[in-house]
Length: 98
Image (cartoon, rainbow, N blue to C red; front, side, top):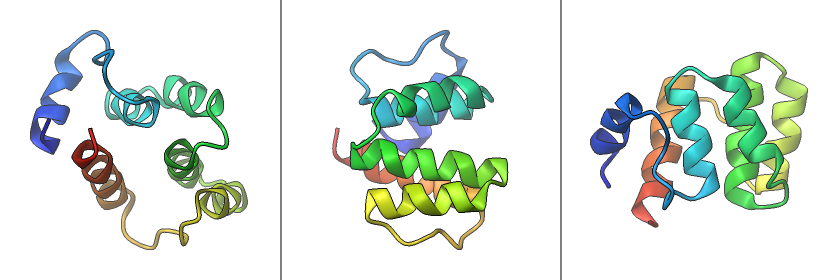
């Protein structure tokens, strides 16, 4: 699936079952449902991809201390690019592995 196809899937009612949890969270976020996205990754703490998305979510929320914790858990540096660019980069990286 390409990033463009992923974005078009926001018109669907639910994310595709085959999507890994981290991508499901980005899908919910793409639909504007931060709480559902957070619930997805919160249930999979300790998985690096979910921890990275968890960091992104708290960055969006403005909770930078919490975001920093999750970036460290994911083994990634704190993002410095605009949030929209981070979302697209993370989504593209995860999609490339599916």
